[in-house]
Length: 484
Image 1: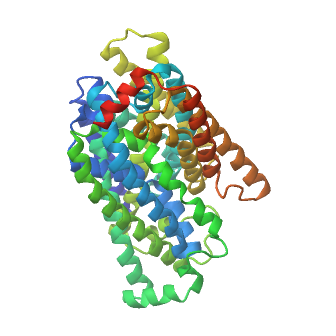
Image 2 (image 1 turned 90 degrees about the horizontal axis):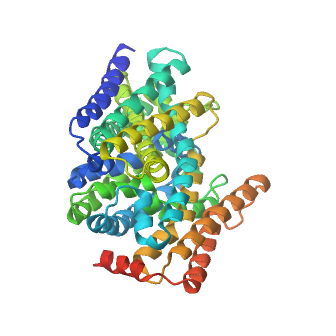
Image 3 (image 1 turned 135 degrees about the horizontal axis):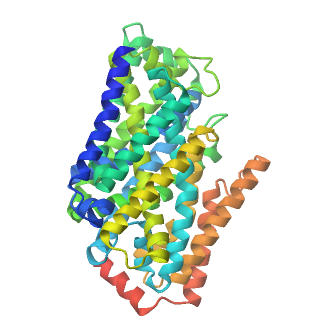
């Protein structure tokens, strides 16, 4: 226990120290919002992968893998395709946009392309981001507080308060620069923690013989190697294709490319990010199955990965495994806090109350907003209203339904107009939410997944409204500029 406490404490303090250190390099809005747009490929790789690996992967996905086996990989390979599109396509165009225009956040990306109705575009984005991200943030706070409660032997409320203060503090101090720096450190911790856990747990399951451990896994059930099974049906598999459309438009991923030094750094980071991402995903399945083997009667609200780390990996390696969960959650938290906070400060505070605010004033406003978002998240996490895995899936479906068509059409069609983008976002989000509610209430699979209803409605509205209300000359000019 002493080793666990020491390792975990060092990890938390290092995360805070790196974020605080970055604060010394913050000299303006560019540093705070986009890390000065000077990040090399290795920082891009670390921050991209770390920000997409959350507690949902370590906790929720390992539980799903333990129950359904390799069928869960349908979620991972579709995520990898989404990675490819987001880095190789969206990332390049976003970086070009930031090269020619003053782009600092997700709202800027859409508002710059659809400039004739920039205010409405910004308003939609500012409303959507807190709705999608605050519940997701709360899920990460819960995961972190639960781990800290177990390690330090304190109450959940005390643990949550400490964790919340830590996350808010290093995000507020270092901004996006601090987030990118700490992501690099946290990425290394989560990678080591996850990769070490597999061979050690496999060896333990076989009584010192990893081959025997694998043999025990194969005896669990023939269904664990099937593409579909009773609990992971073909409808669920098809639903995982949501990640192909979600990853390229997730604001906390897209804004990473605004921090890149140039397009070349993004292209170098592409194969490295894909490879490391697939290695991480590949580790989740055996860990879930090993957890099922060790804990066949796992209780409600318990997690295979957490149980393995505490009881089967030993104090040293178990500590790294626990720190890996914390690293994933911290990275996601800081990223989502930044995205939500800066959007509200720029699009509500600055636009409505202080249009002539100085950079120093805007930095203060952003930091205050991030703090307020953190306090709201703390309150939601305290009453524990959330689950993890399916909340992440719903968030992804809503983001893709609202933003995928406007963003991709904006990059690939000169005929895409601002009114088309607005109609597409509203129709896509509404359709996805309605179908989700119906499916949940009736236990149905209409449209297979709410995402496909959202994408269909969004695409139809984009076509109709862009034809009826063509883009302005200025919008067409922006299109050709980013197309090179």
